Image 1 (cartoon, rainbow, N blue to C red):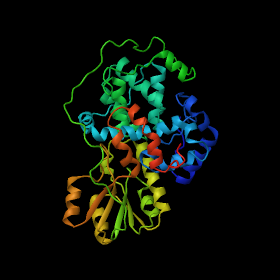
Image 2: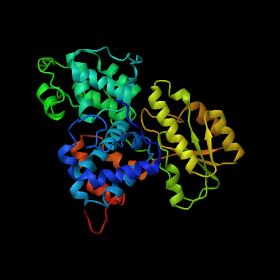
Image 3: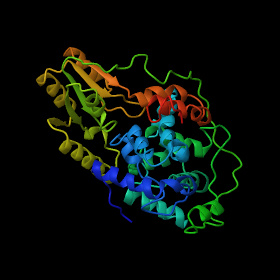
Image 4: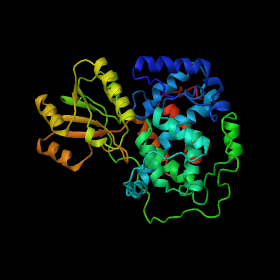
Length: 389
């Protein structure tokens, strides 16, 4: 079941161009079908967008070479879903803190006799990926049929998913459980699975399809501003240093496009990644190697002390770090920031325009957020402001 993972940017963009030519036209009608690996009816871009090995602007600008934005509305919305989840969690960080209280990581589930569930377990562990519809079914069976805690299931995904995102994973599991939208849960049904797997699976009489009660919770917290009061305005800082991390592996391009001279490094810290499967770690290592090979004079740095030494050696006075959203902390740590202050090094967690513009609209439901997508497309110059959509 193992599939070859692309870890070269040129190959990835070429593959996406092919997807646009062959499959994007039918994306809306076929995207909900889990036809099994290699899932040709969806883009498979999520592991790369998660780390911004390619970014949202780049993907949408490629897709609009082939289709008017209105013709690929569903695809555009799927790109924005991850942005929405991240923005929502930024304004509700206590939700993630509550989830993080679950420190256990379950072993690979034993075979249950539910053929589809057992297949998806195997697919996830071997490939690091599940179709989005399969993730919903899997979480529902985990919670309502197998009666397992949703947080343990979320941790199982966290360990094995190539595209694990603190926001979309946590909030997705909560949504299935009936916690994200109070009173509304997602129930896996055999008939639905049979149809959307093209009759590959039909767990008739194997699932709990009659839920009487669901979990509930109560938080007395105030919704926060999802965007920092101050954000970095790109200008010609004196001797800036740009740090690439697994939160953003192409942030350097933002500064290169402005023709700003800067030093750059890639920061990888294995101490932050002890929960990840070997498959995920190897995937990230190869992505980093590709970036390292394609950028001249970039340094590979593996710990905080080494990063401090690089900053001092290069006499960097303005350190630019990718903005770290809830659950994505790599460098936003008191001990590291204290050292920067001691060395009189200015630092700024740079938030991309894509996020800065979108997050303020993500504090409520996706329906309200969706109304803002046309404006966000214009502001990000995906579509022409004068010509409209």
